[in-house]
Image (cartoon, rainbow, N blue to C red; front, side, top):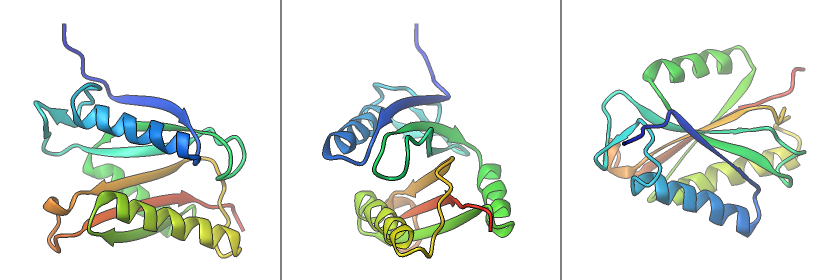
Length: 152
C-alpha cells in the first residue's frame, strides 16, 4: 500500500540538533521517504508547492516550535499577500545561490529585526516557501517568509 500525506510535523528548535532534525526531514521528503502530495516519483506535482509552517512556539526564536511541511496551491500565496496588506504579516524575500543560503539570510534578517525592535513578532504561525534556483528566472534560489506580527 502506498501513502501520500498532506503534511508532516516535527518538534524542533534553532539549535544545531534542531537544524539537523529539520534538514533530515527535508532530506527524507525530497528522497520520497515521506511522500507528501507535492512530490510524485521524485518530481514536483504541477500546481502544488511545499510550505513550511512554524507554530506552537514555546516562547520566542530561542525555544521549541512545531515545524509542519504541507502542500499548497497558488491561492495560498494570494491569501498570504492579503494578510501582508492588512498588516497581520510581514513578508521577507531573500535570494542566494542555494536554498540553504537564502533561507539562512531570510531568517537572519528576521532575528536581527526582532532583536532591534523593528519587527514585532507574534510567535503564532509563520510560513516559509523556498524556490530552487532551477525554477526561477534569475537562476537564484528564493526564500519567502511570512512572519506574523503583533497588532499595534
